[in-house]
Image (cartoon, rainbow, N blue to C red):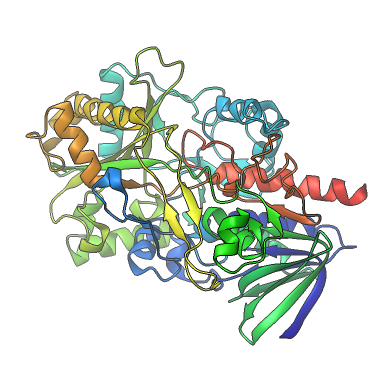
Amino acid sequence: MSEGSESDYVIVGGGSAGCVLAARLSEDPSVTVTLLEAGPEDRHHWIHIPAGYAKLFISGQFDWKYETEPDPELHDRRIKWPRGKVLGGSGSINGLVFLRGSPRDYDRWAQAGARGWSYEACLPAFKAIETWEGPPSALHGTEGPIRNGPTRDLSPAGRAFVAACQAAGQPACPDFNGAWYEGVAPNPLNVSGGRRISSARAYLKPARSRPNLRVLTGVRAHRIAIAEGRARAVEGRGPGGAARWAARREVIVSAGTIESPKLLMLSGIGDAATLAAFGIAPVLDARGVGRNLQDHLVVRMPFRTRAAGTMNEYTASWLGYLRMGARWLFARRGPLAVGASEASLFARVTPGAEEPDLQIQFINFSFTTLAEGLHPHPGIAFVVGQCRPDSRGEITLASADPEAPPRIIPNYLTAPNDLHVTVEGVKLTRRIVASQPLAGLVEEELLPGRAVASDAAIADWVRSAASTVYHPCGTVRMGDDDAAPLDTRLRVKGVAGLRVVDASVFPLVPSSNIQPAVLMVAERASAMIREDARG
């Protein structure tokens, strides 16, 4: 094995969190930082064009191409779980919806044992990550790296969705990332000047000229070398073959909800009996590693519409493609400058609910599968999913081979209320579609179709059609209880010099899209690491 470099901090994973950590830690010129990323540089043009996320999903070029185990509650279907394998990670290929979630989400973190992670404690970091391009607000930042703001150029169908929600009795929300998030509004997007603002672009790129920061791509981490109770190095494979990257101060694992627990288990940190069965010598019996997996399960309901400037209409002809491309090229506006979802509704569908328990996202195009392409007729779709699922899954090893993918066992819909809320969401979506002005625009419900009417029939369709909306988290959670692998400063309990910083540390999934929460965690972790280094 050839020797790699030695540095103060070795960060495994150049995703949303890893890019923040590398940039923030290297601000101190007295320390050295090495960032290891399995994927390539983020140079592809579709990464930077917001609507290009769909092209990236279809091609799988920057994707780990994970797939779940057959899920009994989803008619034994396997679900594809795309995760980013490129600088910026999933933040370089996602749909760019920039929602923090409910303020109560973070209070629940603190109540669940992650003391010091209440909304009040997290708000300064949420503000630090952003430059808000919407109406002035004391709850938003004005000098952070991630520029974001409300969807520009809401489509005619998007405006109809917002109006129909209000006609159906839902309130308008002034700011989803403000004091409260209930109601309907255009989504905030991390888009500025018509381009994706990822952590790779906003945080890492300006930092790469620093002599104390080294960024290596095409590197697969195989294990963390631990000696005398301390993480000493990362061992793996780079472009030149096997290598070792030593850490004088800390190894920071930011490989994501799937790869972070896998790397810990390969390094001997996990359920000791399970590790021994794979021939891995246990270093630390940490049974919580890989458990507590959470994700937002959704159904997608496409509709045929009258002509309304939907993406389907642009892509139906070369002239439409040219018009759309020219508008983005010369004005950085139009459909190519919008992410996956233009607007959302957060609503209560459970009697007595104290806050919204359902999110409906509006999409200005329709499809059956992305691989088949958009429908040839005008169309829109709704993404309907529960905010806070109760079901819990796990990540386990499939092999001791570090190049082999792990087993993903999501256990979707094992908690009965998860199915109930989703069924109620389908019914609420239909009430909104039946409200004006959306009712005058929609011609036909394509899926599940009006024949699927009873609660039982809708529930069966949910089981046959539901899929991920790409928000897995929680597999190396922080907490003050013995079952939590991390303490509330994100340090692995029982191993010195080892932290985890990414979505795997979440005790509970936020109520909406999770990227802002990942960036917030990385901002706070960077400050904690520097504080701990000062003693």
